[in-house]
Length: 494
Image (cartoon, rainbow, N blue to C red):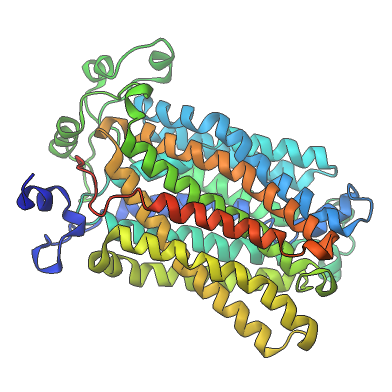
């Protein structure tokens, strides 16, 4: 293959002087997708500040502080366990019936499950609500597919640079809501002190806010989100085994009018021609480049979810047991500040960094900084034991959060690799579903394994570093799998 051919196949990694001008992003639809993505981090991050206290309150640990981390991790893992059972199914369905119906179903599941979570007074109630949340939610992979379908090779990196807006905003607002609105009868006695309902269900108000937001997101999706799959079948036809071609003969391609953001007939026909006429069978998608991209996404997510599960538990654990001894409001503030700064960092720096260095270099560097992120945890505790919550402690926490922002650059890079790995445009949803399936599996294991290891570490002072050895091992796995990623993107049809 000639150098000219390589250059043509990898436009995202061109030197600056050879790059095409970026196509303007379709902001109307793109901003709706960003808005919808906010629902999931809100619902997942809102419980982070009060999850340890919630486990204590329901009494399942019988007052044993060392078991709190285990049950927190188990509760977090349940969402991903049930999601792993259904996410590929939802993604493949979206290739046939369209993205919009699947997103509506997912938002409905998020809303109902969060209301149920806030009303749960037993650990088994928490388990059922989290399981419902995961089973009905297939939106992650579907929304990534929509983002690729709304962009091209010149602005895909820019689009993924904006993707952390939703997650960072949710990561900032969610902990603030959870830390501020949990146990409102105690925190705001003048307003809620006489409410028996708020005393009986002290975490309902914090859960009701993201649940209600999911209802609003459902309405926005139903009224304003435009379909991006060029040809669709109804759910009935899909279940009866009808093909996309049958739907095309009945309904024709999806078109929109009245907006520069709309997908024109010409655009959708070109995408269909370039990407293939129908989704490929699952077996045809299990090719090396899909497996490599999905494997790296899983390795990155394994470490990230393990670290994110341990971090709030570490913050909440007393200093003498190996943590930092912070209360839920302060934990929420730390996570909120991080979320805001991280979102701004991704927006203003990722696209330019990607244009300059490419996906492979940024991804590799981002994985490498995870090691000092882990090492910072025992250092924070060691300093806190001597100096208390001193300026030095907060400085180390700040450095750790800065390293976390660099780590998050890896997500945008791996999303670009996954998009490029799809064999054709019509199989984009299934390709994202395969990647999300692997991620859901490791995220099932990650929180419970990490927090259980943390609990074991604080129970056994002679093995206090085991949890950190474990997380460093996860980083090493991620670094090794990153060696399989090509420096140039695979040939794709976007």
